[in-house]
Length: 67
Image (cartoon, rainbow, N blue to C red; front, side, top):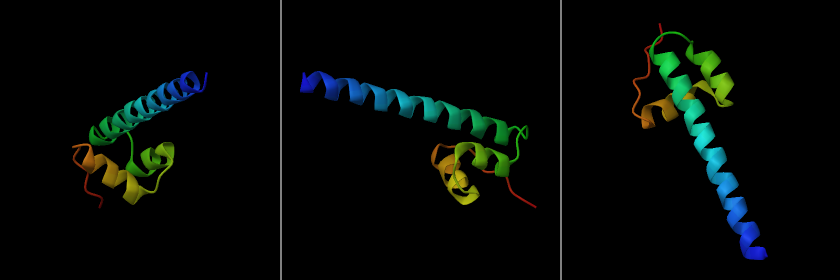
């Protein structure tokens, strides 16, 4: 029974990671297209602006220049 619990827990964590990754990609795309400002996107992602920029860059998205 312990093995089944661990497997189910692992699936749950992987699902949560996939959802978070999808949400972040959506935010990255909206920021890239100018539909959402980076401050709001970072807030929605639950991270600082600098962390959001880092995540965006690591995911291969161009971080918009701020004026």
